[in-house]
Amino acid sequence: MYDYICGKLVSYDANGIVIDNAGIGYYVNASTLSIDKFANANNPLIKVYTYLQVKEDGIALFGFVDTEERDIFTKLITVSGVGPKIALQIMSGIQPADLILAIITGDIKSFAKVKGIGKKTAERIILELREKITMSDATQINVSNTASGGENTQIKSEAVEALVQFGFSRPESMKAVSEVLSQGDTLETLIAKALKVIR
Image 1: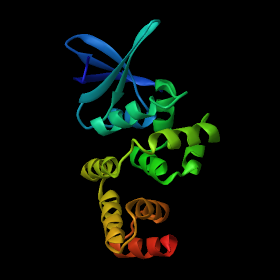
Image 2 (image 1 turned 90 degrees about the vertical axis):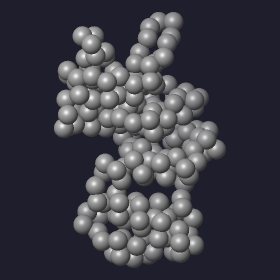
Image 3 (image 1 turned 45 degrees about the vertical axis):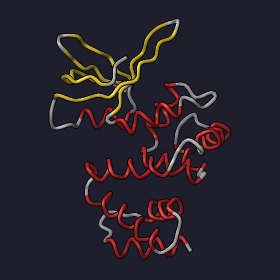
């Protein structure tokens, strides 16, 4: 029903934000990562991509910084036992690109950092979404992050592409680079460190 809402960020709490559009205040549930991005935006006018949940006992609006993040959310809630609140909990603990990487590579340990998400839930998410998550999803997330995430994300993306050119698969390349990436790495040092891990 609502694709996005543009308006002024009025307030926020641990679970969501209030955005004013034409004098109407919309409370939008969001992950803590998204809330931080909205709260730290340079412009008080923000654009929130939304997902509307309609249930017998009420209506809830969920918000995201971009369509890629929303797409991950809508995939998560298709998993048996994972509702919107659990999906936001997962997305509060794992960056979108890292979440996609964990699903593609079957990395259960990445879910361990999320409070309340056990091994069985993690296994179910990976099992049910592995066929739905494509490498184009991961590539799109990397493109979005590169546009707004600074130099480190650019180097990370270039290092992954270099490893793929060397003959390694994209999932294992992404995993290796993510494991060894440190602040201040040059492209050459990052590739060298990733090669030690990947082999």
